[in-house]
Length: 184
View 1 (spheres, rainbow, N blue to C red):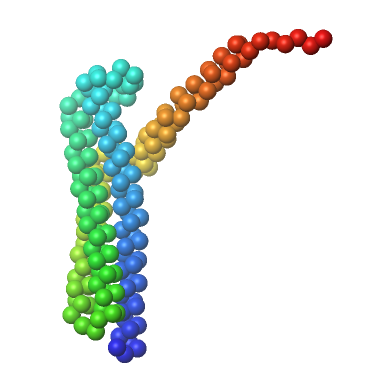
View 2: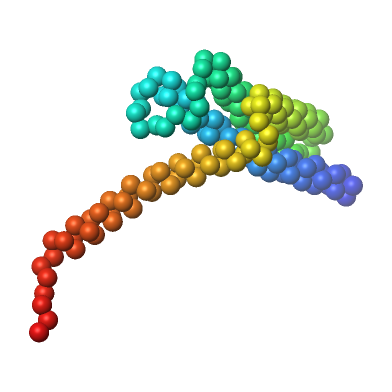
C-alpha cells in the first residue's frame, strides 16, 4: 500500500469510528425515551384498568389517548431497533476497513463504504421515527423532555423514599425502647 492509500484508509476508519460513537450516543437517548414511554404506557393502562389503587390519576385516559400512546411506544421501539442496526452497520464498516488494513484486497473498501452508507441511512431513519413520535405527542419538545426527566426522577426517588422512611421509623422505635439513664 502506498502512503496515499494508507492515509485514505485511516480517514475511512476514523469516519466509521465517529459514526459508531454517534450511533451509540443516539441509541442511548432513544433507549432512555423508550423506557420512559414504556413506564408511561404501563401507568396509563393501570390507571385505565384500576389495577393499582396507589396510582394517582394524571389525566382522564380515554381510549384514543391510550391508542396514541401505544402508537408512540411502537414508533419508539422501531426507532430503538433501527438505532441498533445502525450501530451494528457502523461497527461492521470499521471491522471491514480493519480487515482491509490487514489484507491487501481492494474489494473490501466498497463493502465497507456500503456498510457505512447503510448505517448512516438507518441512523437517519431512527431519528426520523423519533421525530414522528415527538410530533404525535402534541407537546413542545422542552415540555416532552421535562416530563421524561420527571418520570425518571420520580422512579429513583420512589425507590429510595420507603427505605429512608423505614430507617427513620426504626430510629424512633429504638429511641423509645432504650432505657433512660439518670445522671446524678
